[in-house]
Amino acid sequence: MKPIKRRKTRLIKAGRARIGGKSPISVQSMTNTDTRDVRATVRQIKGLERAGCEIIRVAVPDIASAKVLKEIKRKINIPLVADIHFDPQLAIESINRGVDGIRINPGNIGGVELSLKQRKEIVKSIVEKARTRKVYIRVGVNSGSLDKDLLRKYKDKATPEALAESALRSIRMVEKFGFRDIVVSLKSTDVLTMVRAHEILAEKGDWPFHLGVTEAGMGKTGIVKSAMGIGSLLLEGIGDTIRVSLSGPPVEEVKVGWEILKSLKLREKGLTVISCPTCARTKIEVANIAKYIESFSESIEKPFTIAVMGCIVNGLGEAQWADLAIVGLESKKAAVFKKGKFIKNIQPKEVKPFLKAILTNLGTTQNVKLRKSK
Figure 1 (cartoon, rainbow, N blue to C red):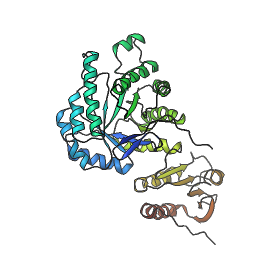
Figure 2: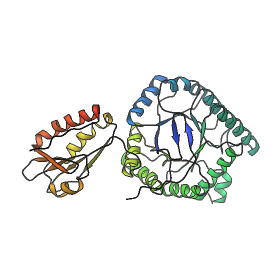
Figure 3: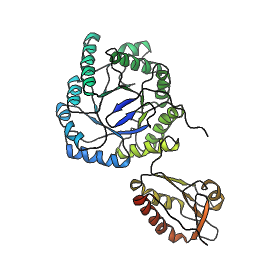
Figure 4: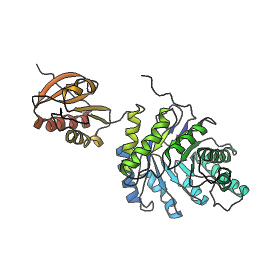
């Protein structure tokens, strides 16, 4: 099977991370703490780092939030991006405080009442400061903040064409001043609009794309929408960094983001659990065992696949490529396989203790040793 051929994009430096070019697709998230509360914000970021977050964004709604960014950055290990809306002074202050990137919408920075000339002057001042401090700019456009003239042109509908045109307008405003360290995001709550807008814009330049379905929702609804929108574009080779937007703890965003990348074989990290849906042939507690395995996921970094199959029908086929497989047998036993080779049989009550020893060892040494039965 051929790997996904990624769209060619320019390489952008984001502190220690890289976005675009041939760099791996990165997973991002955003804090939901009060940014002014440094302790709480850093605590949350540290948790996100452990889950695999590679770039973190924080909201900067006021000058007090901007002024603590230097302290936050000093205490974390991943690139820090300031999320700015409307107020250009917050963007300047954030850059001065040492962030690695800023998110702005050039189309409304400074307020919607400004003239085009005034807005261009504001964008110029931000661009010059970002260039001096080697800070990248994420040009963020979403379907809820389109310019009035574009809404008139597209009959008050946030169409993919309107979204792409708005993004291109903002990009050109930044590029006019010779600035190229740009990452672009086109956000919509509608999956089809988000996907098509990226497809349109992808043909017009080599900017790296930040993918996400904005305000996707909670739980399974948000996960499905995000997986469909982000995954569809990744399959086309479009996308350089992703953020899954879910209502709730941001650590879940990171977990889902990684699962999307792992499912498309674009990144490998930690545990992958393969488990059958179960049927009348099931001889072991598949769901219970799979859930137990997943409880170890945060302690394991290197790629490792475990299959849990209820019976031998699927067990011999679907599990043969797994690093480790537990398969239910007719004799009410479980067979253990390593990369498709039989190792031994164990009693169902022995499955969890057996897995605990394996997974604990895996989390500390990243090396699993199994002896084949004689």
